Structures are given as C-alpha cells and as structure tokens.
Amino acid sequence: MFLILVVTMFLAGCLALPIKDPYSYSSAVGQGGGTPFASYGEGRITAVRVWETNNNYYYYYYYYNYNSNNYISGFQLRYGNTWSPVFGNEVGEKQEMDLFNDEAIVEVSGKYNPADYICYLVLTTNMGRTLSAGMPNQVSFNFYPSNMGNELRILSGRFNGAGITSIGAHWGFVDMEGAGNSTLGTALETVTPIY
Image (cartoon, rainbow, N blue to C red):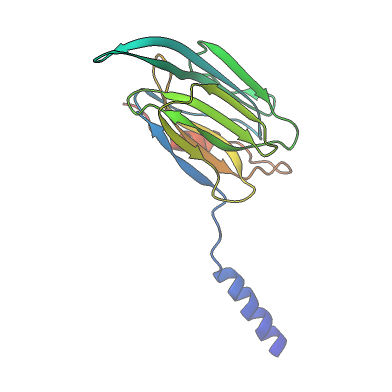
C-alpha cells in the first residue's frame, strides 16, 4: 500500500513539472517594410543560398563620405532535397553552403540598417562552419535557440523589390525518426496577411 502511495506521488510530481517549450523565436530586426515571408519545408535544412547586392556609392553630407551600401537581396533554404521559394531577389553575388549529415544551423547573426536593409548575414552550424554574405556595417544582431539541441527551422521577415528589410529566426527540434517535420503550418501562422 505504501509503495502505491509513493509511486502515485512520484507520478503526480512529474505531471506538475513545467514542460519546456521545444520551440523558440528570435524577434525580427530591421525596418520591416514590404511583403512578409516565412520559409517552410519538410525535414531538416540541408543547404542555404544567400544573394548579396554590392552598391558602393557616395553619400553627400557636409563632405564626401564613402559608405558601402551592401545588403542582402534574397535567400533560399533547402529542406531535405527540396528548395524553398526564393525570398527577396536573386540579384547580385550568390553564396551557397551545403550542410553535412547531422549538421544544423545553430546561430544567425549579422548587421542591419534600421532605415532599410539587412546588410550582413552569417549562418553558423553546429560544426563551426559559416556562410557569410554582405558587408559588416551598421547595427549588430545575434539569434540563437533558447533550448539546447534546437536548430534553425524557419527564417521569417519582410522583403521589398530590392532586398530583405527584416529577418527573424524560429528554432526547434527536428525529429528525424518520425513524421511531422513540416514547417508549413508554423510558417503560415507566422506571416500576417496583407489586406
């Protein structure tokens, strides 16, 4: 009888423990004008393409000051063997990285200009490899998952006719053994429709 009481108390205590949310979101940075997007696909992200536009020109203030106006014009993620749509534009120089088996993106960082575009984007994997595009100037950001073992599942934000104006990251656990790895439902919940 005492054993039944102990087991019952143990199980009741386990049920009372808070369940940690397996997903987290790194809030979007950037100006945020334009069309909303959210990447989606089945399974783990297996490759990334990023296009950067390099427009070096002069701003005229009191003197000529040289400023680089590089920015991220578009990107594309591959889930399993299927590429997502291109978000933004396929303009400028393309950077591409194929991920190895068991490799995942665990950090998204870079720089953004609060007045217009994402200027610089760095994607870092759990194996220490990086893909970087753009020019490292303006305001820094750094996204990473809240929970150990999570990886990048979705990039969301906004883009206009020239490039990516804001970006945020969604993190989660990928169960490679079972089904239900689709990010489409989450992506559709993330993007606010424009009316």
